[in-house]
Image (cartoon, rainbow, N blue to C red; front, side, top):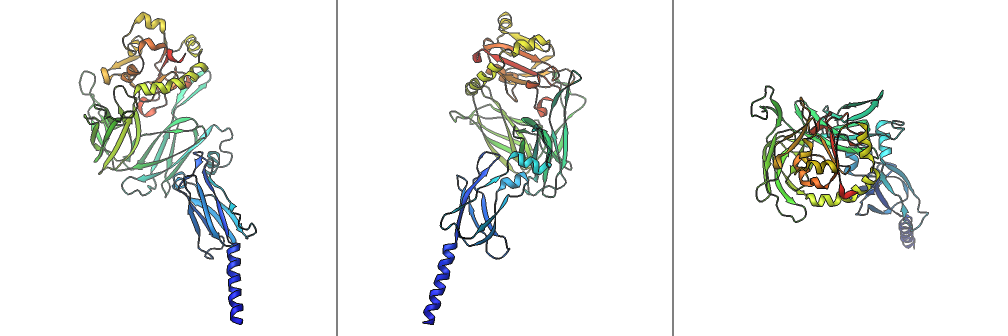
Length: 479
């Protein structure tokens, strides 16, 4: 009888334990991307270390998780994800008490990545942005070969600021410099929202390419940057007549190789004679009949690749290179026609909002203006021929290599806007391919950043320079 009583007592204890065991479920939400966080590791850890083994689960495609058979007790509930490491914040943790009182009904505990406002406060301190006009950029600097964090490296953030001071338009290039921590982390507080930031990282004599990063309206952006050994090589520059210039250009070189293919995004056919270049290196190649390309002597680390072809919109892409290995990249180019179809939808609303902006700016006296009457009078066979009527403009090259320059002593390439939409990396050849003269209802040419409207300023410092102006074109299709 005693043996039976003991067995019944043991069974009762086991049943009670199972009845008191709880299920905890919920979702993990990414407040930055405004979407479920997939692949996060959710962990439930006892408040008293070592008392029980942690219980964990991985979030599914909906960001959902489920922890079963959780014994009674006090716990800490949190999650891990590479996103948290990339933005340099600690994983959020909540306290959970399981006492079995809810019975078989699962406990629900939702978790989430902090909002942009929460991250700004955590990184820059409370009250760091009371007017909600400034943001933060955080990231890490890694060695491209070892993937290890670079401690003591230098990261520079630069952007363009246009302001009215004493009734005068002033343009400046604010700069922030950060030294990376032992984990390679860096942060820039006080950067402008809804603007482009140029990032460059330096380790000793090695430097990355310039990365253009957009800070969204919410105010938070993050970027991982990789640096590798880079050689600085003087390159003899020549003027338009082929004569060598006195001061050589210094370009970045390495032992890496960039290869890949360029295809049409619509029909997946190879794009022949597309130009592929690595910014800041003077390295470029044309694709063959199979759309393939190969560039040798490329520097390692984070670089910017530029791809352009006749009839296609230019493509700018950030890539990670290893100085002694090959990096493969496949590029899909969008045709000008497809891009125009997309632009028409956006431009209609932009133009209706700015319907009288052209006439108002023409009355201000800044810039050179052309309307449909001027187009009919001058009868240009290419859109860029109109630019020859404006002072301070120089066209260089021809055909697919046609480029637009402003200024005399330090020529730069202007920002180009069509129907209010910025088109970075556009050249004169791209402009002619996209817009015919008979489609133009208005054109505005500003040969300096000081004369250009603030809304249409030149944001791409790495390509255009701070003092370069803008070209605005308004087409008949959006009226």
